Image (tube, rainbow, N blue to C red):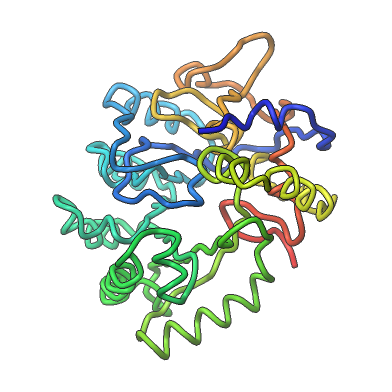
Length: 321
């Protein structure tokens, strides 16, 4: 795999500083039942990295001292970590909202048969990967048969109340482009998704989130192999909008890797660019207890333009249209 950080380090991206912490995003490990072409984590079935119980305890300890509202669980497939449910329960007991970044097909893996019901029982918000509403496009990007399983999973979630008005169970879908292009306008694409999935499959959801592909890890390496890396960076840089800077997710979020080390965002985590305070090369979540992060600088590189290009892109979808 081609290393992309050396190609991203030289940057003119504007400096950023942190605001108040609102979201703790925890990567529970890189093991996944899928190996998607666009994956910025390079996750897959052969990855073995997984957060252990001691680190999970440190995360819960941090939650006890931090005035924040959301625990955002990601991976890989976060549900495959044996401590996933422990973290969900701990956060919900403490009044936090919980997001599960779910690839949908994991709900049919061995040992996951009751996961959908567990999520509903704890009012966990599901943010589900669904890179297109057409079968051929999804299977080309994620593997044969993934689309059909994803539809089955969405129907299962709908049956539990997800995506239905008044249920209190939120189900958002995530779109990302097939290649080195920017996402189309989120609002118009959401309307297309809503109509097609409802008419063809009877599937309901709350919102569509559009994300730009990050030029790092598996996707970045593919760009290098195809000779498209530089042109994609130019596309992102030329589409930059200053007004998106105020809303980028790294200003109010920190990302924790499977070992407990802390980053400004999930993308910096994949590039091994730790959050820095003072002269410390990297910090563990256990060392952040009681620390004030507001006003701290955020590490940036050329990949950050993927978050500010066009309508903007973050874990919460477009920043503005």
